[in-house]
Image 1 (tube, one colour):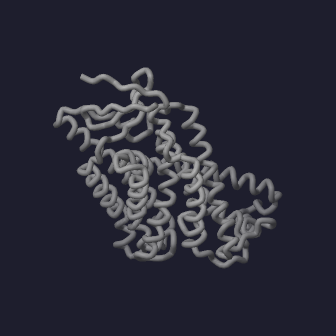
Image 2 (cartoon, one colour):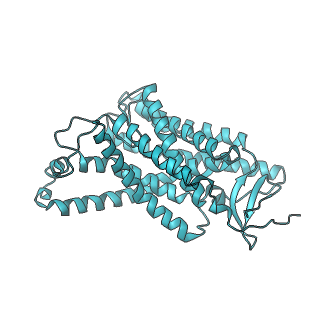
Image 3 (cartoon, rainbow, N blue to C red):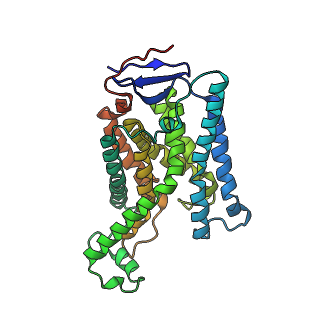
Length: 342
């Protein structure tokens, strides 16, 4: 049986049998700090991407988009840090203790380490599997033409690399997948910036609203935060509100999965690595599977943030709901006891 005690800080803390605090669950939403977070994250995102707008080049230069987009990914982390500093100042002014930043953001302690590590590994590779399922679903609906036997699209790409076309297909695919996984791991550096903000500070702060309101709110804000790039036609090649609407829908569905990883383990790291895998595998897996003669697919339909991804995510979410996974909170401890406070 889990028990909680509410400290003077307004946080309901669970402790294990040795009296060690396990999870941070605010007893109330820090609305002031939430406003600080949203204004900072959104404002910095627009500031970072402003050169893409004022130069008139938009997303025509992939290198610039990569540069500004990568910098933009750190704005939720900066916003979370600033919001937490405001929380700390408010708590000190009221003479209330406040949880440490590592516990609030969910990046430390790694306890139990085994569960967090294995969940992270499964999330990293599992996302790649879900991306493939999305492409297969797109093919089944006629949205995408694949060549799963000849891998003609992949072989066409190999021909652009000197000497690569001479490799046996199996060896070329193995090397390609290895490079994809290494590249995905390198993305962890920037996905920390997003996940420490969205699934770290923000999701923790919204937990008093309840699981589903918190997950949905984070998803909507996450999607709207992408506006500086999406309104230029990034991701869906639909400049304007329609593209932003697609992004919000995709982020809500994906945010539920990433949020579940955060809540299920009490750690932000599984979401960090899952996000890195998504960014690193989406395009590379499409290149591997697509038919060389296929017309350019509609990204609003075939990508994981598009319609096929919504369907795959919905199935996974339904399975998690039916099996009661959203009700499990191991990070609160299986056996807890109240802590006496002065």
